[in-house]
Amino acid sequence: MAGLNKSEFANPVINWIDTRLPIFTMMQKEYGVFPTPKNFNYFWNFGALAMVNLMIMIITGIFLAMNYQPNTQLAFDSVQHIMRDVNYGWLIRYVHQNGASMFFIVTYIHIFRGLYYGSYKTPRELLWMLGVVILILMMATAFMGYVLPWGQMSYWGATVITNLFSAFPIVGPKIVTLLWGGFSVDNPTLNRFFALHYLLPFVLVGVIFLHVAALHITGSNNPLGIDVKTPQDTLPFHPYYTVKDSVGICVYLIVFSALVFFAPNYLGDPNNFIPANPLVTPADIVPEWYFLPFYAILRSVPNKLLGVCMMFGSLLVMFVLPWLDTSRVRSARFRPIYKWFILLWVVAVVVLGVCGAHKPEGIWVILSRVSTLYYFLHFLVIMPVVGKLERPLPLPESISKPVLGGRGGGPMPAGAAAKPMEKA
Amino acid sequence: MADSSAAAHHAAPDGVTKRDLLQLIAGAGAAIGAGAIAWPLIDSMNPSKDVLALSSVDVDLAPVVEGQGITIVWQGKPIFVRHRTATEIKEAQDVKLSQLIDPTLGLDKERVKPGHDQWIILIGICTHLGCVPLGNKPSDPRGEWGGWFCPCHGSQYDTSGRVRHGPAPLNLALPPYAFESDTKIKVG
Ligand code: HEM
Ligand code: FES
Image (cartoon, rainbow over all chains, first blue to last red; front, side):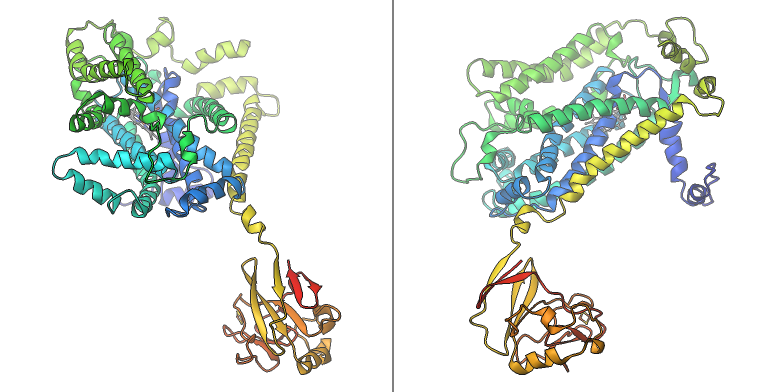
């Protein structure tokens, strides 16, 4: 396979590099002319947004790490030092803190897109499973990051989450001791959490590379869920989707900035302004909002081991989705029955989130049990059964057909789209 | 491609299109945005407020006997405070500018505060590559000129902190300081 690359770049410097290391040819192929379905809606922005978000987290994280001290005696104060003394430290920390929330908002929408438009189905199973790995790594990273400021919520969150593993018989307590590096959450725990919190985002970069590599083999799904058939069904990624993604990034940054500059502590917990105290648990202990649905699943089961298993199961079930869904139609747009079930699943997750934020009493117990039941019923029963029974709506012949309003596949999609703009 | 023919349609006679302008504006906007994002990150690496707050230290000179020097820390840097003997002062004052490697602030009277000839206060960092020269303690090697001797590459300074033997190119720097009383100075 050895041999120089025949570069087509005119610039002599680029050409010289590209001949020896064809990164420019690769970028041109994967992000320049890459044929992309021409009917994406804005849901298809969220992968790119997640990528931008990850970069923001890594960059702000590195600058935070320059001033943070991973030691139980110093951690809390070093974070206050970042907020008060370091130039723009408040900005860097608020961006990192709210960036985690933005990351989950973006990723949850990204996952919903996949669920609704059937992006997990063949041939994108592996792409989807890599996505689930990404989600789990993200959660681990976010959890360990939240421990670092060493406030009350950090400490007690760390205690509760690590104790989840104690539910497993025999090995449970040994695992917990191993995680702690001692007999309670303490300095060794904080040290290793910092090391891992720094490491995992770079592991994420690696897995996301595979995720995108797999995407570029299968090609993107689209809102119709049908395969690309002819070049008329696609547009080159640049400039069409680079521009569409840029629009999305602008809106995303506006929302992000609003959060950072006008409500930086809105999503946080006031208890984390109190330094960690291993002898006093705060009265209202709740996880960050993005873990609430899983927290509610955990609490909805009155048995320790079963609760823990259900909580982990709610994530792991995602891995087998491609095989639980028996329908051959991807997009829920053409699945008149399933469409309502998947939307109901979204409602169940939101209800679980609300339940997770309330004390497990009265109505909240009932609601969280019903929603947990539906969460699993949806994947394990409804998906396989409805896929078999449902009669899907007729699929369009091609992606071009409905785009051109039934006027037949025209050869000039861009020209057609440009017309109204010229008038304006 | 479809878009290039559309662009050609709008082209002005000189070949400049509307798209060129849009591209320039978008590029400029992105560059300004990137700069605005980069600045807070870069500035966060500058000294923080608590570091800047450590900008001055008070030194009590009373315990420093003649012939001896002490080293204090100001902004993380060693500051030499030396109580010179009468001979050392005389040696320092008798040097002519033409004898010096670095004649800037070369006269001894430019290097001490008036009326306090016995006190020489210097930033104790060799102007070659940043080592701390020896010579504060009478038992240290002080070099041929009786001031300081840098162990790293052998630079020598006289009793006024002027470089007399390379490789260091410059005299030891003077920190900003003032006498608060005859036995007290404030550095910074
Ligand atoms: C850190 C997080 C993630 C990043 C940076 C990321 C990045 C991307 C990018 C850039 C794309 C292509 C653009 C797009 O279609 O929106 C993509 C597609 C995809 N992602 Fe992710 N992703 C992340 C997390 C996830 C997760 C957690 C899942 C699922 C559990 C997932 C499932 C998918 C699927 C199935 C596709 C193909 C979508 C299609 O073509 O319809 N991703 N991802
Ligand atoms: S650092 Fe002093 S002589 Fe080189």
